Image 1 (tube, rainbow, N blue to C red):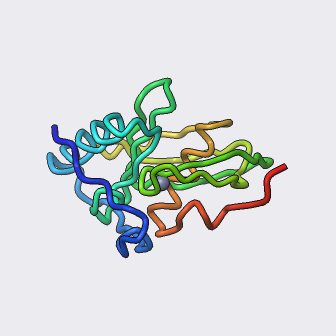
Image 2: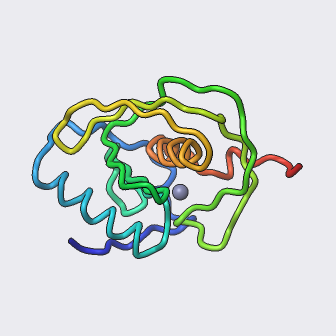
Image 3: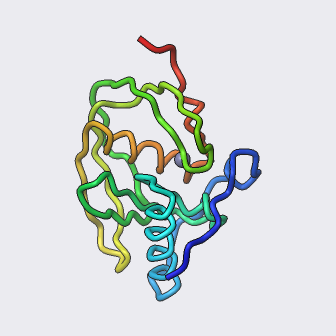
Length: 148
Ligand code: ZN
């Protein structure tokens, strides 16, 4: 495993759309392992592959209740809304209040290519939305709203 360099806010790669993963091989496993280690070293709760310069639809999330590895993730359901401050490992120290769904349902493949289904609320719902946005080249400032 290795810690990879996290791209910062002005890097043009961060606004590019990532490509679907088609090969579930040792390279993908290595990427997922490195991403988990990089996220933990940076004390974040989510990281998308594009943030380490790899334009593949891969993300990791850990909101304190275990690591999720998401390959080709898609939001398949949204309910309600929540407002809270949100940060991003590519924008250290910057927090914006954003509007996100209260609950999301997500489908994603695991490192072996099997489809898994998730339902999340609270910070985990926000993390799913934030990381899947990254795969579409969308940054959290897009969802910025007034506080209160
Ligand atoms: Zn981010």
